Image (cartoon, rainbow, N blue to C red; front, side):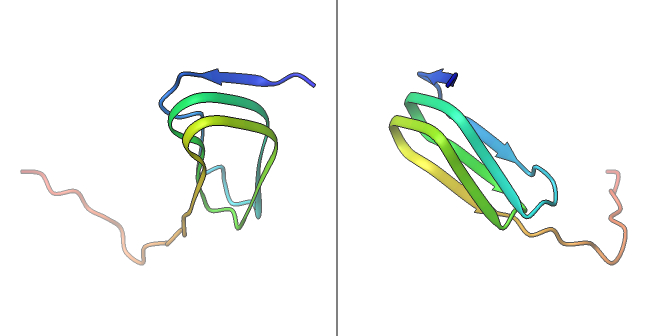
Length: 81
């Protein structure tokens, strides 16, 4: 199997709001000497799958922060100074 390799980075792989699916999957990575998070997910997905991924020497291997989407009932107006 071929892997994507990340080495000596601040953050390995960052998933940011991939859409409105029920599942988010990250697969096929090797991360080493990562300063903070190996894999970070900030998404609306209810399920996270981390498959065929190796994370070595990271402060946090996997971090997931589920985000809830809220629709505003009124439009937001920017005030000019």
